[in-house]
Length: 370
Ligand code: B12
Ligand code: SF4
Ligand code: SF4
Image 1 (cartoon, rainbow, N blue to C red):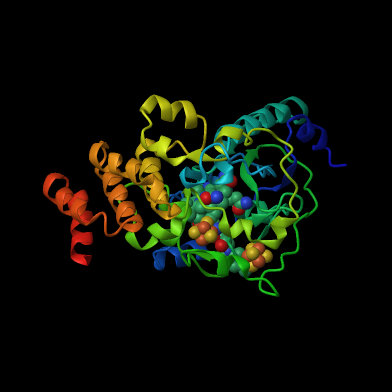
Image 2 (cartoon, rainbow, N blue to C red):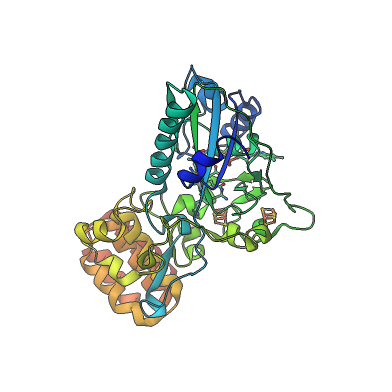
């Protein structure tokens, strides 16, 4: 048994890897290529030296501990509203914000290492910190890259979120425990299933095409990707769901991500959320950081993707009364998708009456088409 196992069990950290702090020079070239091809994600920390040299993040660091927290829930939820109104969040957002969960665990780990290993300084990193979480998980032997660019653990597949702790204590390294990935021979399921062709080649994602990015980005949702969003209003799980390695993944033994009410949402209710409603439903989830409007925009588009005319009154109400022009324009897009004939005069009236250029542009687009 590894000497850190009792601490990890106490802190409910099921997957982890440890080793000496070291630079990852291969990242430098990967980032340079992504920047050159304009595929370096805008949500990623800037590609500074700290990303490939964790020592710069904590100069006294001697060891790195990477942890993975599984979030897969076997029970998909749903059925809380009529199917034509039902939409969803990516699984990682079905509960408490993983940043908070991981930071709590990493800080407790730091204190445990202070008490039993003499650690005096440590620094935790989750997401917005410069560290390259996936690369570290692979480097310290606890995960393997898949073609979809996610990393896969042996027991929980890619349904894990990651965080790291740098600490000034020498710790015994862990043995490698990553799965063998069947990518390429014979599998290429993720590349084939991606609805926006965002996986442009193995291990390379074009963030500007990825629904996980587009559903979080503020402003007008790019027209060419609207119908490909389906009913997933935050994030996207498709390239993970189709992966055969994930079919064998165990459900998470932890309860942070299992909030039943968040496994499916009523899209019509989202459109009428006040700020208080938004906070009450999503305030603790990782889907909250962009605010209410982005989710309402996505809900308006998703109702059009569901394909049922039952939702027309909700969309008309949104078009006429919603405070955000982006949400109104999205409702108009869905109205035109669901009922092209019935919406002709509405396009004209909207073009005349709605003063906002975003809505006018949407109405003009449909008027030109008719
Ligand atoms: C920006 C960001 C995004 C962006 C861009 C994603 C991306 N692929 O870059 C967007 C918004 C699209 C996104 C989406 C998602 N994300 Co994200 N995201 C990040 C963030 C903040 C930075 C990622 C980054 O640095 N990208 C830069 C590029 C260059 O890295 P990369 O695409 O991962 O490329 C690596 C591989 O391709 C590999 N590689 C390249 N060439 C080759 C060649 C070979 C042979 C091999 C083996 C490997 C290899 O090396 C690259 C560098 O490590 C990280 C947290 C962090 N600080 O690291 C989370 C993170 C990567 N995201 C995470 C998650 C959960 C997701 C989603 C699943 C969420 C969802 N359900 O909607 C999706 C998955 C989409 C996908 N298929 O990747 C997890 C990853 C969990 C996992 N098991 O892999 C992270 C680590 C957050 C966390 N703390 O847990 N994300
Ligand atoms: S779906 Fe296939 S190609 Fe994609 S990550 Fe999984 S095993 Fe690899
Ligand atoms: S998260 Fe969705 S859109 Fe992004 S690469 Fe995977 S399947 Fe494609």
